[in-house]
Image (cartoon, rainbow, N blue to C red; front, side):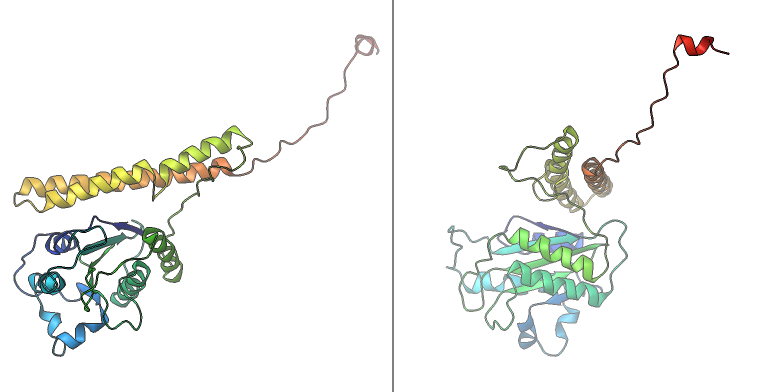
Length: 285
């Protein structure tokens, strides 16, 4: 399970469109169980299960409301980009999760991201969308119900990665293998193999490696192209998704190779030396 945080935006329509795989607005209610989880206070804003019939536009409007109601609230940096968007993806060989499993993962990731605080009455509005195979999207408005800006915890991506590893273990999913990078001040590697393994690990690193950055750009481009109305754009977006999947496979292969390089080598078996046959011995009968 790989978490990825998108740049914050001024509105929820584009993030929701990326989560659904098609642009918003979309007429009619969303397919059943598309929104698998949401902020606890939503029940007080709706009657019964009214939200089960909401369209994508209504969900977007619900997330956007705090931006419209609190028109002067800004981030610590002075901007109004209040929409937080996170997506996580399963390993290609993972099983498909059930609705309750997706909901559990969503609430746990929301707490790790700091957008859901247990017992907090004036927190953030957020929803979790499961509309594409093996993918979950969390979209939140960082303007709280009390009109203040919600500051997320430091190192939020590290917290999300740690919680993702726990979810993998609890739900028996394929773990994302990652060989930790050696500290900058650690002692020098004792062998050439260890040095090469460190280089491969840096290339394969899911958080800071160049391949992860390239894969993220390819995926983002695919999502943007998929929103274009012509059939050629759909085919191009699909091709880019396949490229992103191959890049992920390359990361996994590099990580496996680094692990093999770091594995201790087996000592060679020492065979007894053969006796030296002298010329005199060869002449003896």
